[in-house]
Image (cartoon, rainbow, N blue to C red; front, side, top):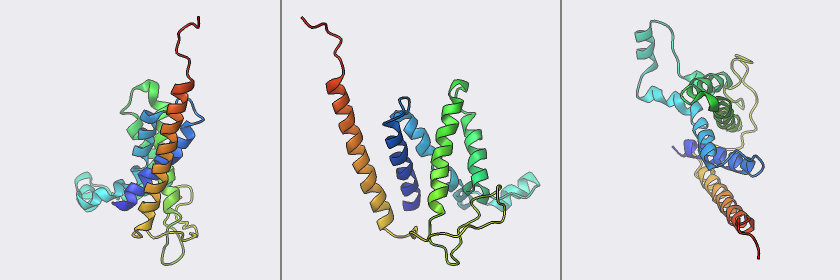
Length: 176
């Protein structure tokens, strides 16, 4: 669970900071991108609904592991986007994709026993496992602590920016 929290907070930090320069990227849209950071973890649905049972029900081979790849994020971002009003599709897809890609990229930095990351570049490079810098272990408690600390800092700076913006905004009253 700490791994998912870390991914959601990383998306929050990246999109909130981007929102300081992109006018339309306000808090409600940042949340959409945070949801996109959850897409690669949809493979954990296998805990509740076994992939073999789904495969038997559909009559075709089925796996959840593709959700944590580049192709899975692209496909699922598109599918989720269709749940929104058509006028928001481009924005929603972009934000879901940004959150999902941040998750996948961060996973590419994890420690793996053989020094190679998962096949997260599927389907671009279907069987290629790129080398990983082995920056962190997902079970390390310092990882979510660091993510929480950075996100609290960004939260404070963001709120401070709001207060400063409100203080300098014109009131609409004519000066006498």
